[in-house]
Length: 334
Ligand code: AHG
Ligand code: MN
Ligand code: MN
Image 1 (tube, rainbow, N blue to C red):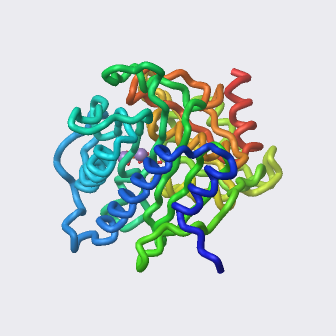
Image 2: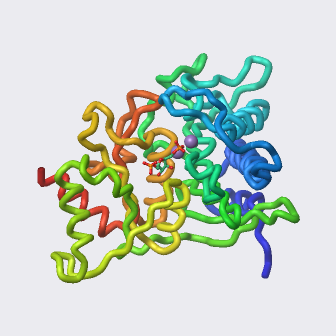
């Protein structure tokens, strides 16, 4: 088998479609390299003294794990000096991180969830890194949070790394979705799946069922119909999976279909769900749509939402498009 590296893929993609200029290619390669470093730390586990809590809280009031902080540092350091970025933003930092003055600035902005699925770190279950790339607005001076307030449809690239039995990088630059597997001996990313496609139909759903009593009526209705199985209105049995790492759940859905949901609920109606729009929902929505799936907040396409805050939360329904259409339809009826 002829092996195509990430670099070769990016260079050829630019030649064929003119959609990955050199600076964006550098950005993607630097992020991929950082993910390789994170993968290495993750793989060491207790031997690298990377497990456990850091005993600090992030801006969302969540206790940070050591690996949340380590991964954030790795991504910041890797991306600061290359000249390809104007600023970065992360789940683990309250405000944006402009590129320090000692380095040249570029025209891109990078957002990331450095370590997704933190509750799985200490139990050796798949976790990941999610990233999203925006263009800096024309004529931007000193970058501010306002410059990041762009709808997901403006993303020029998005991807995630999943640290599982294999380490993989899934990437879109707006021309389909491709998957690269880390060759640990060679230290290189090798293209292993081209043009990933999510089947439109599925019989598998993913939701945290322990929140059932708090759900809004459209979600109650949708899930109860799935649970009713072949004697219910759907006339078929559905299976359930919930890994509690969005990266791992989305990766399964990209490979064999499914619907992933993290709805808002009645516990605190001022909090629209758990997942964050800018560095979780938007990049995943971009990837899922590029693979032929759909992603909504229950009412509208996630990629059309105009953000107002860096860390804003959003309900998420994504995956196989026929199922996303059903649950979105139930929301629209009410
Ligand atoms: P993070 O670890 O970056 O805070 O994200 C965790 C998210 C997401 O990955 C996952 O789908 C969800 O939280 C799991 O939530 P529950 O703990 O409610 O299952
Ligand atoms: Mn996350
Ligand atoms: Mn995280």
